[in-house]
Image 1 (cartoon, helix red, strand yellow):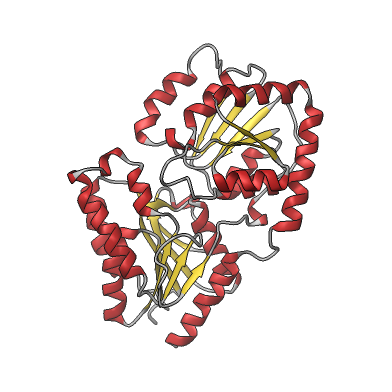
Image 2 (tube, rainbow, N blue to C red):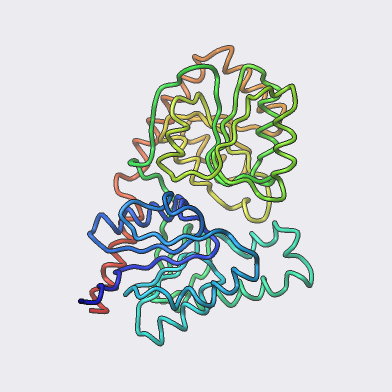
Length: 364
């Protein structure tokens, strides 16, 4: 029996679910070029990207994750190995060097500032995590290709650095006109710092509205959220859909009247530009947004939403829109027009796929 051919690209992660939208977008671009892709991650294999060989396991303990971080880079036989976790970069650099394989490091968040948002990562107990992030950033700079999700993200002096912004992939979206009763949607990770409870309270104060939350809820916030949505004033108006593959997530958003992006002003978010806002605008979903600098610029430039300062203002906006849907129609038209004029027809994921093809040609 002939041995199976090694995959062209192996994407490995011990921290991301295989339903993660960025993993789906990257894989789709690679598959469009006929590349053989395997993905090692968490969750249900059925939620993985179409056309990839998906290997998934349940999320284990911290000790189990550390063990997988040491083992997983050895398991893939791919010609190009891509990791999306900072803690996997050191071992992946070692394995790809020894095996003379190509390595891609995807740095899609400011991990240093992200740790500043986490209470457990502060003080002496968080020192190992902070040191790991610092070491991983330096090692990522030496990868054959270093991918960053935004121009402000380190490392800046990489051997080869490519900015792959989280822009929408039209094939995953489902633009539609509003249908049914007033409904607002949020797609993405859910935690207090991302405006989880602000969204719930805004809907609680706008009785005609319901809210669809599509994404995983942080463990620390789940109990509080479940207790809150069971209160009589919400009366089943908040629906929790959990993590969904991107196409399924945006099918849930289909027919919604509006969207929310109520990120708080934390170190991790103050300079960030949430990809969901681009996706909301491209889907024709008027956005209620907090006044973080980059969100503010896009909302004002597009005319596709409103900026609010607090929960009361968000609730007042919802009540105004249900009383006067005509305002929403104007915002929807502005959102779609801005997306048509400003979002590229080809995505940065296509440029990433081309760069990985170049790595494969070099290794051949």
